[in-house]
Length: 346
Image (cartoon, rainbow, N blue to C red; front, side):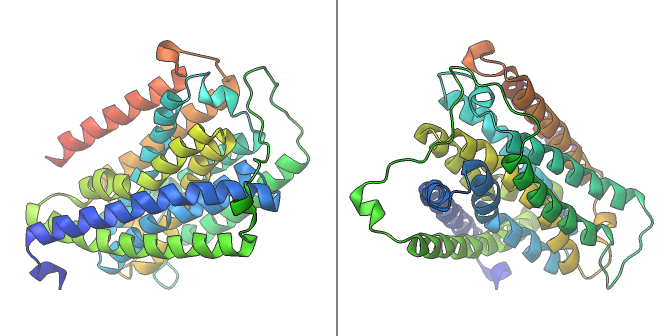
């Protein structure tokens, strides 16, 4: 069906689905902040789990749909390219928080720990690619390990927050995670209703993700563009737009831990794209079906995550241009990666 549609219609559908993801992401931020206050779980945990998973739904639908269609490179690069793009969004959010470096103000040990978990998760595909091509039910064993590491990281993060053995030094610029006062209209809405609305937005974003996967695949074939280029720089960026919207919106609301936690948690959740993609890819191991360009984006995401964690630990007050030095590095690393991808994809 998709292949029979005119190119103009495909582009229109792609842009419309992108708009759905963009505006749904905007609405989710406020809901997540209120749920963090009502449940008492805190912005870092809610941002990392609920908001991170919800805003990633469009992306996981893209990867799974691409895998079912046999497009291993598109599925893989959509996941790891999204992690790199979303890490970049924290540098963009830093530009919107003019008081102090965002990584300084959003001091939270849970986010640092989750970033370390993310780096571990990003190394597992390297292990899969360098190991023999062995599968169980056409699924590589690493795909069974990734969810276990992800779940273990969540439990450990909660323990780190409840019983920290290290604590960030409070300064006059540190922004604490404190519950916001709700107005009368907001208090009249039950917590259950907030969850229902949140779930409806997730469903909407999932549908939009399916449309993006189908239109992007068809357009890539017509324009003879590589799956890696489309996945890393088209579908990954578009499906990551909710993270940009929610991060900037959270910063402007003063929910700094939610902003940082949403990005790191979303990136951690995005590693599960690879698991879902490997299960959906029925031609063998997904990790052995991809090329060097896809491997390059894992390395890029790993380097960017390391820089981000370093910034969270160093907590520079201000760097050049009133943003953190780590933000400048993130911008430079991503720009260089995009340039290399374009040169390789020509």
